[in-house]
Image 1 (cartoon, helix red, strand yellow):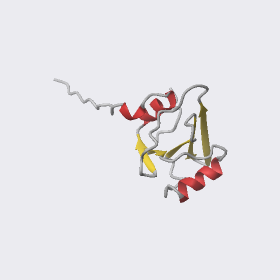
Image 2 (cartoon, rainbow, N blue to C red):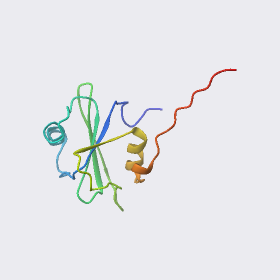
Image 3 (cartoon, one colour):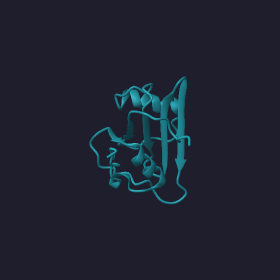
Image 4 (spheres, rainbow, N blue to C red):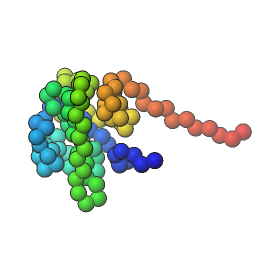
Length: 118
């Protein structure tokens, strides 16, 4: 089964709302200048608007930027607006929760299990 997003080392959620009229060029500039990150790193950068009813995710894939957007017809994405940091790290489970409208900060990290043959 193919994943919605590429396997990446890091996923970042911007902690300030942005103007959703920005396309990949404007968001890549924000990643570089405001968030002090490399937009060509292959990491995923998640942005949201002031009403928190729209998300945009930008990432570099091989030879170009990919831009993914979701708009909620009802409700808001559960994003805390009180973080002093410009970025918050998240894992793929939390990102999927956020996209689905689940309180992603409460999703526990999956535990890795290891077994040995007796």
